Image (cartoon, rainbow, N blue to C red; front, top):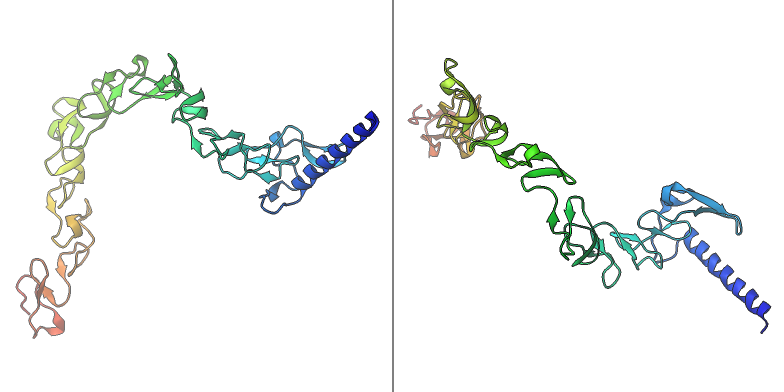
Length: 305
């Protein structure tokens, strides 16, 4: 066989391979999922750039490759696995995964990287770390955190402090007063823990103003705006000062802090659940009214007509 014959035969094989690629990327193949939104456009091409192949006059051939999870000359085919970013050889063979995963033994991108890894080649070897993490002294799992312990960071920059700490300039190394959830200085709390408040002690503005959450709410308050202005009462209480009792008929002894309205337990009715249903009386509305009561109604306390 002459060199010209070999060259011609090679060209024929290349032509058939190109035709097969075109057919597989242009028409659905049984068993291979296709993205129909990519037909007749460049939506599945990187940067939405495609062109017409001048040699074979193919339309919509992706110039710079496919977007994530797609393959083929026109990028119609979808990779078989969710975490697969690139599957150049065939749909069920991932060569590159989305962030946090690596191909694994069967190339399915179901294997997870260490938690601080951006990219990895195994569950013990990261090739790049997520923002704010790094490797040192031979470590390979990005276990070192750039962000100081008490900070919330943007990359390595301390942006805000975690609850209980202040002063981003000092890497949030300063602690808030004991009863503060969040503070801007050792004397200025922005939010108090339950049972404490900022303001005047006993709501008497003749005294000093405190802003370090040292003042305690009333015993019946679990959260308050000031001593006489409760925001949340202990179970069974309601009112601005938590001075009133929820009805015994309130489910779980919980009622509206302002009005005392509640969801009723069995045998109770009314907005505040302080009346018995027809046919019942007693403190707990669990005793039957006498048989001679008209329409089954009787007085709640004694069961009389």
